[in-house]
Amino acid sequence: MTWEIIDKNLTKDFEFKNYVDAVSFVGKITPLAEELDHHPDILIHSYRKVKIMMYTHTENKITQLDYKLAEQIDLIN
Image 1 (cartoon, rainbow, N blue to C red):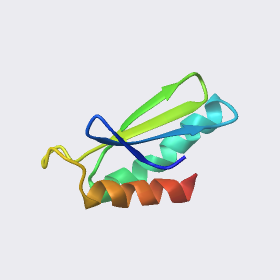
Image 2: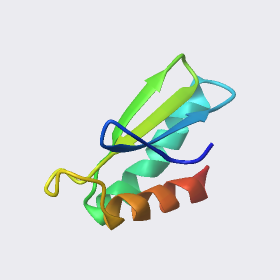
Image 3: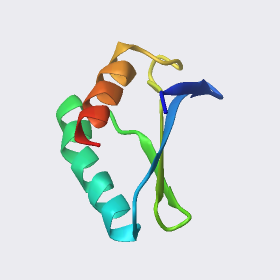
């Protein structure tokens, strides 16, 4: 699945084989978000699904920073 724009957010859903893998994936996002000082909203649901939602709050829109983080997240999945 590709990233989509939903309600002003760059959004993507990821599915894993279990809860542990989903949580591990979220843990891998943390250093990327810290390095860019850009922190997405992350929802773990249905025990093995992760939804990432982001936009640049200071700009009140999706910016290149969001796309940069999205590219980095795709590389870890």
